[in-house]
Length: 282
Ligand SMILES: [Zn+2]
Image (cartoon, rainbow, N blue to C red; front, side, top):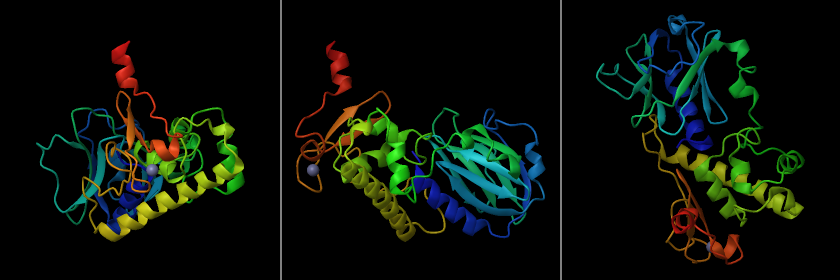
């Protein structure tokens, strides 16, 4: 589940690895991967790969006057390989061949095809719907006044912080870590937060995302592995002792994700109802 730190380290490593590379050809074995058709994908042929950068949880591959905007969704990876993919590799979604024989490859695990890409002139990027609707980036965290303004909504913190239109880059893993770090309940209503708690949450956002990035810079070599060594303290660690106070961590299971927290420090000692259980008991 690549979020801001995972996408950022991917962009940094790809930028380093692709410096000076020229594209030979590009094709999309993923039938539904390309969401744009004009310019055609082969307009990338002959272009220099200038840089790869991150926008929220998306990647932007800059090539000449064109940009390839890539969303990895939950199971995609964009990596650089020494050799072209085997035609039988069913995880291939998008292949960008480099003149020196290497290949920039978008792969996706599992049977679903949800990762997507758009090719457009660089000047159209800012106006693209998926970019224009992004809130300010979560890292570096916005200044306090702006951050407080983003939170001034009567919504629970957990979904609010994951809403890319509010603040860009945070997903289901790092939101748990940020809320635990700030000692705030995932169900706290954002607009009810005291100014002191807003400042604490902002600090947590900056320090959690910053330290994860530092961790990745230390442990990840030139190639970003399929499975990143995520330094998680609470997310998916329910049943284990809280690393700070020793209380048993709890979790609420939703249809396709889990929300983990420390009841002692985040919910006033209350263990929240697990919706999975309460549904079964209805
Ligand atoms: Zn605790």
